Length: 116
Image (cartoon, rainbow, N blue to C red; front, side):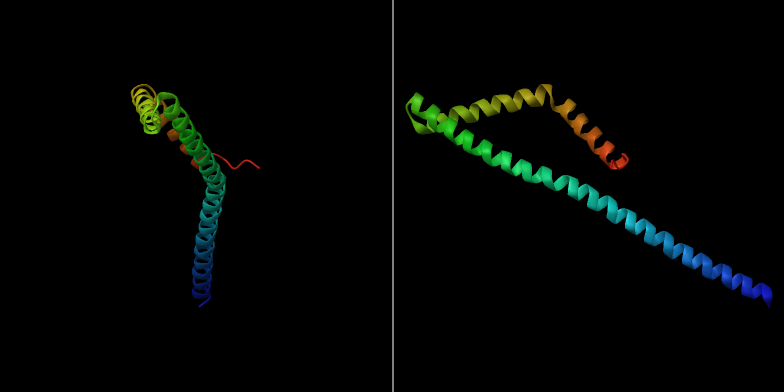
């Protein structure tokens, strides 16, 4: 009879340990997710602000260039052609390096220790 109580106690402790371990894993996942989202959010806001700035600068440059060339829409075509050349140059020479850089950055972010 005493051995049966010991087994029941052991089973209860194992169940409590399992629930506690599960709760700990859940809380660690929540912490890691919150940390990544909070790190990601300011970057998104900054990208939106920079994108708006660049769009307005490009519109202004295209209008100015079109005025210099003679027709407004020529400025937009010229700027689009410039960006097409830059995109081809980037794809040919910097694509793999950039991909590797961001891949390594993400791995370091996911596996790195929390700096406080």
